[in-house]
Image 1 (cartoon, rainbow, N blue to C red):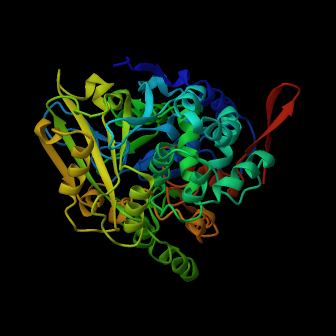
Image 2: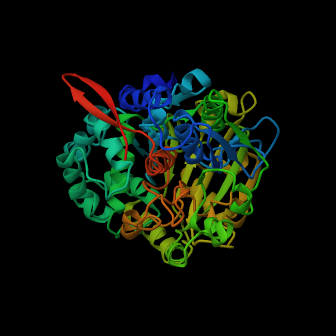
Image 3: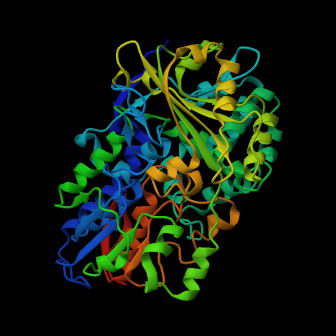
Length: 528
């Protein structure tokens, strides 16, 4: 087995360069001596301490506001938490575990998170996709190596991905913001849109080999859409481009390490995360001048009360949630006994077989049914991070997509799918923790019905998310900053970043406008 690569956030050269402009903007805003539209002594608060909530809090704190963050659970992080869910000494990520968007986030890349304890671990290959013949298709991080490994489909894969891999520092900020924004790189985004609007099924027609089609199916299935739906192909492309540009790393020690690094950086501004502080009504926060909510529309309707207009309430009530997940965490006696040993090169393994099998599974969940042979996403972090389990032992988690709010026990279908590609897996299990959609929601209220993406990501709700207002609500001092806003799900913090900047701009705060001067980027402060 190849040794895993341990690195800090600075090691992702594309992600690091991407963060330079954001870092300059953030530092300038924090220090600028300008005339603000409101006094710097004014206070803001953020409800929810997931990655988006923490990102929003940091932007507000950098701008000079006093910021409090309220978190309902005993530990900060939302879905980015790490806990002993099975046995003592076994550390499991409650939700997100692998973070291509975290490593490639324009905003997170601008922050000195590595100085606050964050270190990314890259498995030798981002992804493995085993097949019934005992082999596996691997998605190599290096695009050239990927083209070679995909054989006859290598050139087609390269033509699809290379323009965006090479220009990740320009592409990522464009794709991780509201789609209705005017692009700064229109030709690049037009090229992406030519394929992004297509279904995954349409895109795979350019591949000759069923192995490549299966690989892309697993990538596109991260959308929670049917693979025949428009824009399902966009998710497959984005996941692949990120793998080649910045990798699919895991944080050393678990996703809690990313949350802790964000909290530590936030604390340098004197801001605090108040855990076990559930907000039942925004009326209790009336002494704050700005309120940003890292919650989904359903919770916002419940806690905002009469602060929202009737028309805006009706818009939120029409917001649709996507399929849920059925998740299992495992404490294991040893590594998973894959038939295809090359699966041990990847932290993430997609289990579903062919394109058609995965398409059938995703269509079932999308249409309110349970697949007999579900597509399973599995992560095996302890193969590359020994801090996750006692010596010689391992951890893993797996989940499949199910109808929102499903009460069906999917444990056997999930483990049958793992056993299909790793015979003897059940004999390795020391303990397991099963999470139905309802149990996931009980530990994180944003996971409505087990939906880990903050709401359905079909074309309509990509454009209007959660309404035409994006982050703004009908109340001028109230904003929503969860993954129910653009750009949607994923651990990138960009929902919070954009929401906080909108809030500041609407309150006459300085807006940083990058201005090109020669080969250097300078910043002008303007006011709205």
